[in-house]
Structures are given as structure tokens and as C-alpha cells.
Length: 198
Image (cartoon, rainbow, N blue to C red; front, top):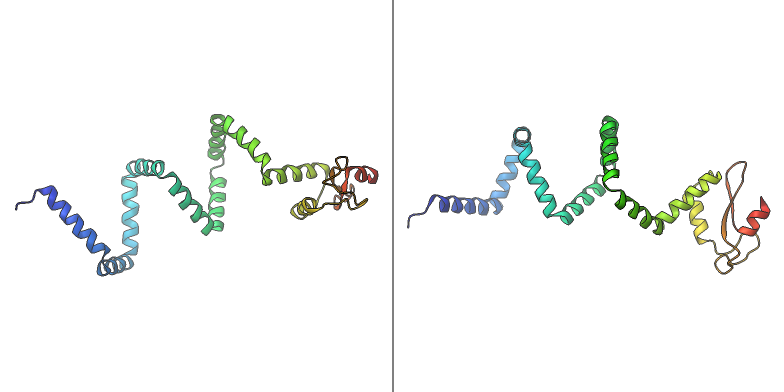
């Protein structure tokens, strides 16, 4: 039986694949990579420079077809290399300030509705509520450990002064009391006690 050129290529490809997946093949490949680390690195760099457009298109198509897989891979990598990634991004922003500003401006222009909708949604989440509350405190002049104060604010059920139930009494809205001179936190009070203390 005479094989065509395409059939020969396919047979060779399958044999190579089978060998690469075998124990002997894996060991040989591993040894080759270890012995030729620098050469392979240089070859990869040259190949990338010569085929940058082709690689970009291929990468873009792959990412579009594997969005969830890519998100998961990216998230896993970021969580594993968090400090390294933060430093890399910080350096990039420092060296490309104008480029980053322009990209952000364009994104805001093209995604106004998306940004508005997300902002509205975020305000309803626990993180959003916390952020809004803390920003309000900052504008009133609170200077303290905001996370600790917020945790105390969230879990306080009774006014520290008159002991009224802050969840049951509609007139007693929960308030954060702080020293207006030092800016330090004092108590969680009902609105009535907070007004009296001022």
C-alpha cells in the first residue's frame, strides 16, 4: 500500500506525539530543555519577534473562544504571584502614565452606561455600602482605623449612651460619634444622643 505525502506526514506526527507522551520521551525532552535552557529562550525570543502579528491574532482568537478558561487561568496566576504582579503593574503605570490615562479615558467614553450600571450595582453590595459609609465618615473628619470602626458600627445593636435598640427604633438611626477636635472615634450612638453630645 502506497501512502500519500499527507498520510505520511500524519503518521509521522502521530508517532512523534506518542513518543513525546511516553515516559522515555518525556525524560528526553526534560533533559534537552535543561541542557539547552538559554538557547531555547533565545530561539523563542527570535521567533516571537519575527512572528509578532501572527501570534497576536492567534492569541486573540484563542482568548475569545476560551474566555472563562482564560479568566480562571489569569485569576489563578494573579493570586499565586500577587506581590510580583502588583509591582509589575506599578512600574508599567509609572513608565507609561500618558498611555494609561489615554486608555482609561477611551474606556470611560466607550463604556459610560456599563460604568454607571456597575456603580449603581456596587452601591448595593456589602463592599459598596462599606465604602460609602467610610467615605462619609472621612468627610465628617474621622481619623482612625476605618475597618475596625466599621466592624464595630455594623455589629452594634444598642446605643452606647441610652441603650435603645438601634434596629427596632425608627427614630434612633445609628450614628458614628467622634471627637471633632482630634478626629478619633468615640462611640456608636443613636442620632438623638449624637446630636446632644455635639
